[in-house]
Image (cartoon, rainbow, N blue to C red):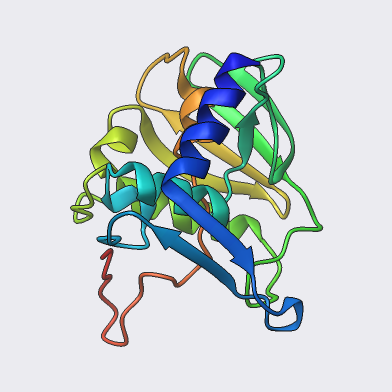
Length: 178
């Protein structure tokens, strides 16, 4: 589709990637500008967005052909009511360090994004629509919305990157979101 062509074309123009040695699993990227951060939620830069697409995944994804929200790191999702979404996570997802994705990681990620002490550039994006997140079963997470929001699934697909539990924790018990 035209949308895919534009995205791929602009990506190709601003970035060159190559895989060095498959055994060391390193991604090499050349960018037109320096990255300000590796946290895609702390930047509105297009280049940071591209890197985020290569390094971080979301529970859901917008299929470019159908434009429908489909599971990515999730096995399935259901809209329980106008303010509640349940997401069942897949059991075959691992992080770069080999640790397995858990519902604790999902809850940690989204609670980090809505933490009032989180001053990342795009944290307010989450606080506008997401009230809380909880683990309801070993493989299910429940999202409680601030109010009815027809775009909530799209927010989960576009900005809802999942990080490993503990990513922002400091030794003193505080969090460092930078």
